[in-house]
Image: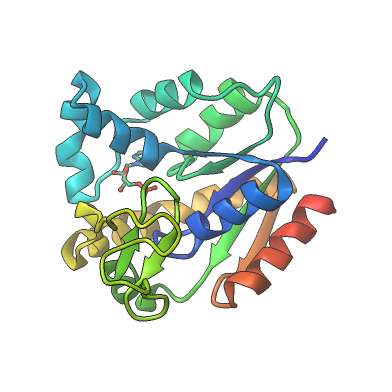
Length: 212
Ligand code: AMP
């Protein structure tokens, strides 16, 4: 059985791009708490209304709220997941283990990169929600302005991908990541990857981790 994968890293380090490849090539399912929360906002559900302001500011949503959403959307008996965007703090790491993974084999992959380059990278990110393709206006622009190369759908600029919110998201990340890394290191489950390499090279490292 392949290990459950937990992707750790600041916003914009390529977790989403790698998650897409892992799904396509290694048979995993992707679960992103950010996507689940954004879909609650799109549905204008009670939960969506509650979390919208928090996400727009780049702050963290309440642990229990995110955990419930996660639990309602995954079934570990039948599926091997990539957890993307959870855990965001040490409490969530402990909750993930005690209430979701419950001793299942897992590995945490840390996408390590110089944080200073991320504000520009994320501000230029554009996303195709249906195909899941992720573009960057500077390094991977779409062939037709504003449209996905694969599906032709309109590209989205996430509301929280503006420079000011990104700075706050990075600040939140810096303040929370060390204990999470310490937690997985202590369990012997941490693998650190140089996320400044090309997407292909990073995927090679991810593949190695899964097969080891
Ligand atoms: P992401 O798509 O992972 O960048 O997440 C976007 C936003 O959703 C974050 O800036 C948080 O406001 C919220 N969010 C996503 N995952 C979590 C989580 N595990 N705990 C708390 N807030 C989260």
